[in-house]
Image (tube, rainbow, N blue to C red; front, side, top):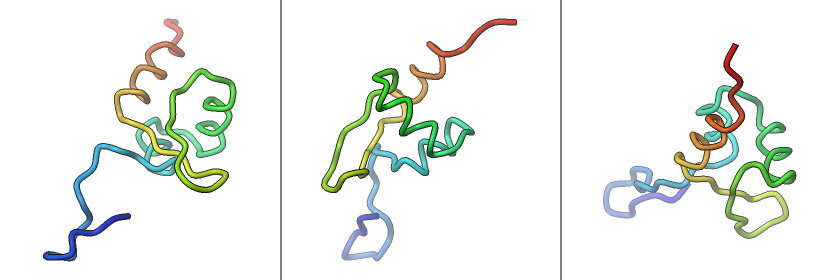
Length: 70
């Protein structure tokens, strides 16, 4: 995570890592990767092979679209 050099605190950013996105959705990271690969969840690819970043609103939209009312 990027840090602010003057205060040594994490920089404020809206982007979530896969682990943070999984925490937000209360699921495992494998499900996040699977849904991105299937095209059902938006993500930005950064750097390496499995480096993804997601916006909280993308997670919320995916959860809303995937929700079934019982």
